[in-house]
Image (cartoon, rainbow, N blue to C red; front, top):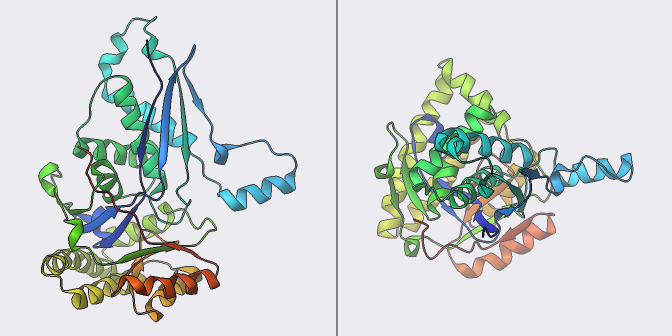
Length: 337
């Protein structure tokens, strides 16, 4: 008797090195457990992908539609589930040999997510990773974390044409803080755990309103890189070195140098990526409170490195006063393997 099952994935924050992951670079990043994307499979008479709240097409009136779209953004999860389903099926051709009446072929696939949307916390890839985990569990075809990350990347790159790098999917597939080397060939040996005890006090702050879709800015920078733009090429050589030195700083507990590296990561990125007024303001608020601050991902959320845990109360109040949300991230104690 088949039973419903649910798998999940969490948002991530890049500490150093991103966005060089899409350019064969290196990065340090971690997932945090305060939010999650959850995908559920349950037995049904037919196969169905169930829309989530952000996929709604019907509203009470036009005004309600505009209000909901402003609050939730214009991208939903159905296309992610569709693409993940297609990629999983093509990767497992043996499923085509299942008998037509096999109950595993009929189920409802649905998702829910409380990860803030379109603020650079990898909410889309969390849905994809959770979906692939759920499909693998349903069909009893385990996928190792390194392979899961590559499949999830292919879902967005190849099935949906979204400009993306591997970092988010690797962190979400492994479920732990990692130092990652993205030079080809990427294998399990490319990733090593970062001892959570070495991480300084951290905070995340984000804009409660959906921001820009991450694929747009990434595509612009990719185009410049492929044209040999000197500024972009130089930046992509700096980011990996920040990750390398940052890992060494964590290991020797050199917080002063780590602060400088985090700020340099943001300043380098700011020279080649478009930044919203909100992004700049969030960085300035954190820095005015004595923290080193950079973007978590593509924009809309920032990661701050504090000198003392007690400093967060002041920083939190400043963000709240400016209309931003913030928290001290809850980090995983055990990795998924």
